[in-house]
Length: 187
Image (cartoon, rainbow, N blue to C red; front, side, top):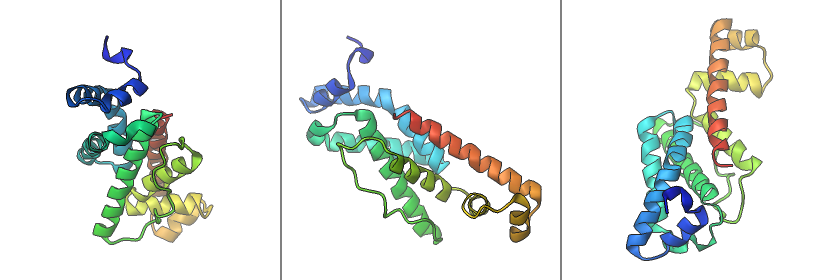
């Protein structure tokens, strides 16, 4: 039997078994999902080293909490939530360290293993991606999308050229598309 022959639900069962079996199951789960976890973290954090740290932290947490995985129906959704929480924690930490105000994250609900991927979670990840943008890009993007300002109005308000506004909004949209495509890996 190969790695691909073992279902996700069976991997969860094996993770709760004897330590040698559980280690093999964790390895299979890691090989199957680590690239998705890293990609999602990278899309939001814009830091490959930090994304790799998030992936390792997520799978370390799976190992440490393997005895309580019994209620996990979808490892994909479970890992998405863990990744989301780890990324949000890192962004909160960045915000504190950098001492700048960003959108609060306390409105995000805690982990619920029975819940499925929702529009609210997607919105939270988009907010996190926007919060992770460089300050000028975030400001320009929010002026455009939240306030409905034209490129020219933004250029005058910020003191940059029309082309600079266009550039930053283009890059912001490209980053958000990456986040959304990474999120689709978990659906």
